[in-house]
Image 1 (tube, rainbow, N blue to C red):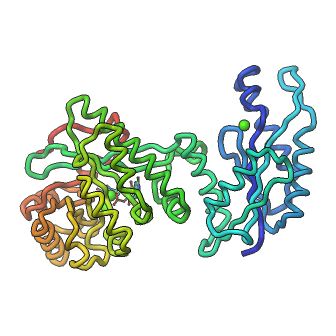
Image 2 (image 1 turned 180 degrees about the vertical axis):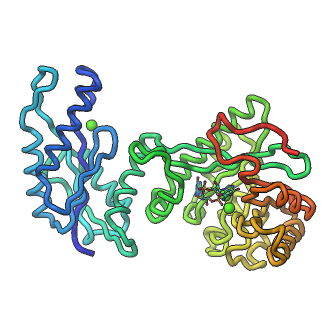
Image 3 (image 1 turned 30 degrees about the vertical axis):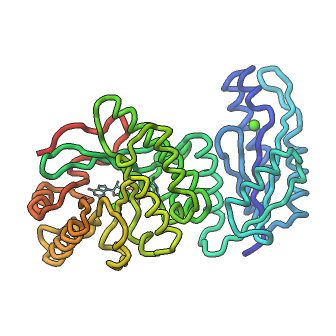
Length: 393
Ligand code: C2E
Ligand code: CA
Ligand code: CA
Ligand code: CA
């Protein structure tokens, strides 16, 4: 709760330099800019490259007066003439600043305002916006992840990997689950655990889910064109279900992609369902009315009461990996798995086991009446082009 600021910086003529002098000049320019920005910073300040020609500054212990002074100084330092490939240039940049914590609570809102301030071109003395980082142990890190993720969405740095779902009786691939990853420009391929919590804490989970849905439906259409009538599963967060109009949004996307609604499964964790807000429950009802399948993910780990499932149309229940792993040895896991299978079938749902790593476990589940399976035994999540189509027997 120390006051501070986040600043977005966007170079004004980077594209022009790149286009006229080439990429090496563009790269050189970015190095010079980073050096010049760094010389103006105080100990404890952080400079980060966001990708493209954008940078971010984290300025702890700053108020509006210090931020303005620092930005005026930085824009003067940047403007010192520079010669690239014999061409003299002056570097200009747009700044957008957001101050925390005094004006707002939502990081996403703050970043949007910093962004808006930046595009208004109020160089050096931008509008001031706010951020309060209550329950975050590393506010600066979160700020960076959220700022970067926002740009990742704009720059299409997210990728989907797909993990097949296999019919335990026929051994055929019957569908795929989309699992998001972030192809980070510096940190490599990041798993969802590195960025989903930050997305969920901010409004970013909404554009993220929208991106995943669009990508997955487009990929599915391409599979359909090659004769594979796979269902596609997409994970959604509790926060997506809270958003009014989510079911209409999904219905519109299906129409736009020409996808039959029953070929989309939305995976909702048991915990999200158990939260049982009226809004989330209504969204689930609206989605099933459209014909979209609902899958209850991580089943057995949350606290759904039976009465919460009653009245909902559940297409699939997924048994959590923790019960599957030791099911051939542990009598308690066996009892839990058997009762989940009975419950699912009693409700008219299919049941899928996750995290299958051995053929013994697959065989046990098949005998117990489990319908479908996923796990490293069959395939890890892989890029679209590498999804196996084979039968597993
Ligand atoms: P999940 O939905 O329960 O997905 C299954 C996770 O288990 C995946 O991790 C998958 O790679 C991993 N897994 C699959 N088979 C095996 C196995 O045989 N053994 C082991 N040890 N692990 C296996 P991943 O991809 O890291 O995803 C983690 C979680 O992130 C997912 O758990 C899901 O809750 C969330 N997630 C992933 N993509 C999205 C997305 O697009 N949107 C949302 N809201 N959440 C997502
Ligand atoms: Ca620019
Ligand atoms: Ca899932
Ligand atoms: Ca799961």
